[in-house]
Image (cartoon, rainbow, N blue to C red; front, side, top):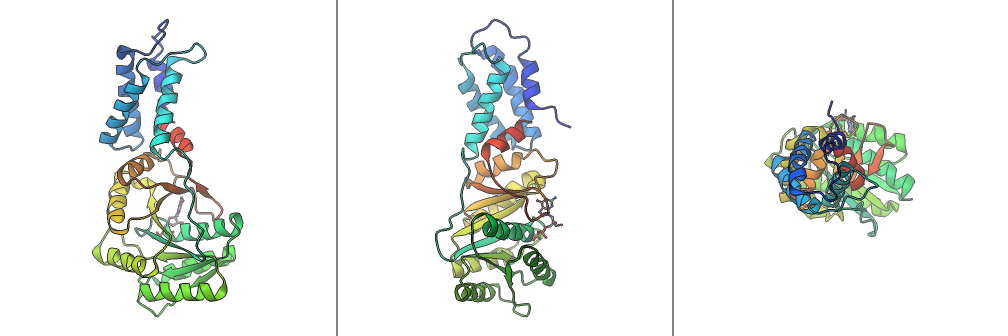
Length: 295
Ligand code: GDP
């Protein structure tokens, strides 16, 4: 599919022998290679350009030590830069409040409900929490059933009011029940639409205003490339979310959307989802994603 950037850089530097430092001339051609590889990996062109300008500055005058080749040195510089841009270290959830309220938002089909189940399972098994899932999708009865099935699989209770068409009330009632039952985390799965629309945005914004969640996680399908970035921008403007969840990374996307979203909305990516099985939720590690983008 893609030739990896590491391979491209290695071959771009093949000619270069006996020079002790990376110079203007030998950097110029490789910068182009890096930019092309980033764009191939779904990184927005403008961002790829800014990034490579920075990389050029960093690389210039770098001493090439004998232990590694200039190509390898460039790969390291690029990888460090990408990783830094995506936050450097992993971002944790804020779980101090009792119960912690986590609102899940995103387009229909992005993987919200699946992620809600995965997150509940993660918090239960890895963080010793007692989660309650709230099904607040008032448009698709099937979404409630889907969440119930997931809840049964992981042994987590699901709160729903199939007859109620008021998402704010459902969320508030669910939180009341969580407090009464001693749940330490509440995960609210909200409705999504196929495209961003006002009704959906108002509804999620109203739920946010009513329940004041500690975390608002925006779920986005990594396969949707540049669209993912535009959607992230719109949701962030309305919801000011606290983190991003990148789903369907088990597909063949390179993951450049992670970089572009981080760069555009300046919010941490907290989790990646790599499959439909409930135990495949992964914390987001910038360095691993940098490696994936580089190939
Ligand atoms: P929602 O409409 O946002 O709640 O999305 P769903 O959770 O129902 O997911 C939509 C489809 O994507 C379903 O068929 C899921 O099984 C699938 N899905 C969700 N997350 C992942 C993932 O990480 N990888 C893959 N391959 N499929 C996923």
